[in-house]
Amino acid sequence: MNGWYDGFGFYHGPDDPRLLVPKRIPVMGWTINVAHPRAPIVGLVLGGSIVAAILAKAFA
Image 1 (cartoon, one colour):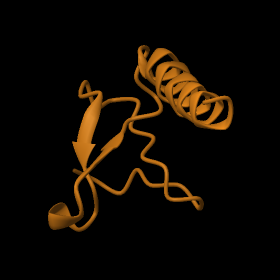
Image 2 (cartoon, helix red, strand yellow):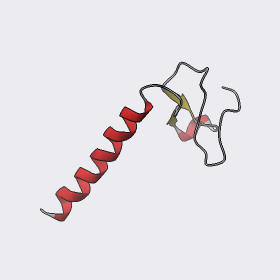
Image 3 (cartoon, rainbow, N blue to C red):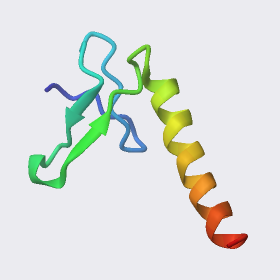
Image 4 (cartoon, one colour):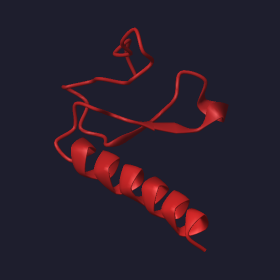
């Protein structure tokens, strides 16, 4: 893993074929390679899941 982190902490490695990469400190988990072609889909699914959970709790 090379220094492909931007100023906001996102991993942007266009030459890295992995979608999920370990964070800078590996024990902290994983992050998404925002340069991967499937990253927008993962972001939309994750964001939609969060919105759906909030709306489900609000109208329950």
